[in-house]
Image (cartoon, rainbow, N blue to C red; front, side):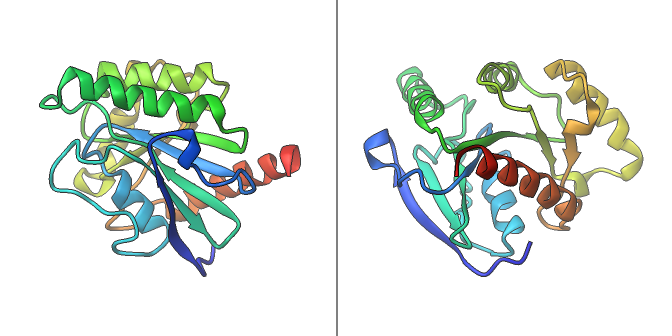
Length: 201
């Protein structure tokens, strides 16, 4: 995928603030500080399109990024940060659920996890949510450069068992800093976008 344009399209907390539905969207869900922003930046070869934060739980909005004027990446609020109040956590859940319930142009939701750690109960809830909405259940396991390739299979098995994933091909090790499997992920995304365009656009 040749990236000609990648820019922040819209920041929103409710459907009234969303951009129009003229472009298909791929959304990313994951725990706070799991590397969603770094993943988006690496995929479009930008260093600071999606702002990374040293403070987990800071992203409380849905951020829409226009890629090549052809589709959008959508960064959903991170979840699971322990120091955030219960009220805040509930607000994030409402923000995410409203997006999932109202975007007819949503092509796929990707769960982002850290390959080094077993997914949490909240990851499992999010994954089940994704599957309930009828999406494929693709998992990007970031920070793959932090472990040796010899440990990939054990980590993938760990993720598979925790999230109850039947097909391990849906779990893709990825490194934002080393661009490990970037081409593979783009191939998957292009198929997702093509299928959505054929269905709706």
